[in-house]
Image 1 (cartoon, rainbow, N blue to C red):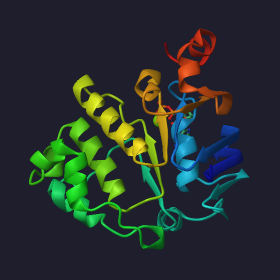
Image 2: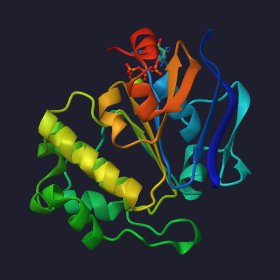
Image 3: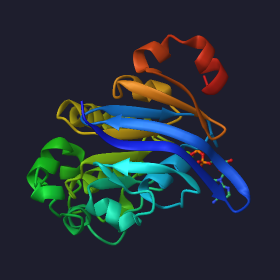
Image 4: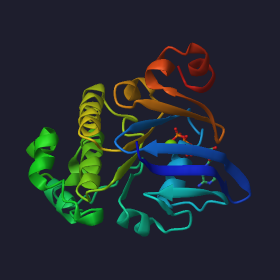
Length: 236
Ligand SMILES: Nc1ncnc2c1ncn2[C@@H]1O[C@H](COP(=O)(O)OP(=O)(O)OP(=O)(O)O)[C@@H](O)[C@H]1O
Ligand SMILES: [Mg+2]
């Protein structure tokens, strides 16, 4: 297995307050890793540090064999990192199809695995909505759109911050199906979530983060039976 993304001892501060305390994480190629933790545990901050949105005070980040600790977000995107933040921002005035076309580019090494026809095949719901203004979609439909839009850049890795948060169960099921299919097709995904159940059938392994520290690492199957860790660190 090849390692694609690694955080080593990453610490992040917002002003004077320290938010991450030496976070270690490693993501293997073609695997889906869940980053689980309660509200305020540091999931989004970890994702932002990986994507280059917040600066790292100490520690290092490696991606596709390079040290990217101080690389700006656009350079990381160029290397094949697609970051989908929790706020699901679409271009509201543009159609679903235009939102996708705006993001179309070949990935590292000229990869063009993802094209519009393949997106329509993978996201049947979006096909039906292709002419709709993105600002008129439901939250769940927008979440599907931002995942599809990230794929249009043919990335090496997807960083998804809480894709299931606040969404109706029926659309969460659709997002789950898409992520399982992507994983089965060889995608590499880091999935930040509060909802462990959502991750169980998607991710093989989970990191649990609490108060800015990784406190546990286990297979998702193991974790689902680990009542102690779940009670201590997860909201269930
Ligand atoms: N811009 C900011 N300035 C100061 N503190 C912040 C900022 N953003 C987040 N924090 C704090 O950092 C800590 C970690 O927040 P973070 O957003 O990473 O948590 P999270 O695990 O993503 O939580 P959630 O499940 O609510 O999305 C929290 O205590 C939060 O209050
Ligand atoms: Mg968050």
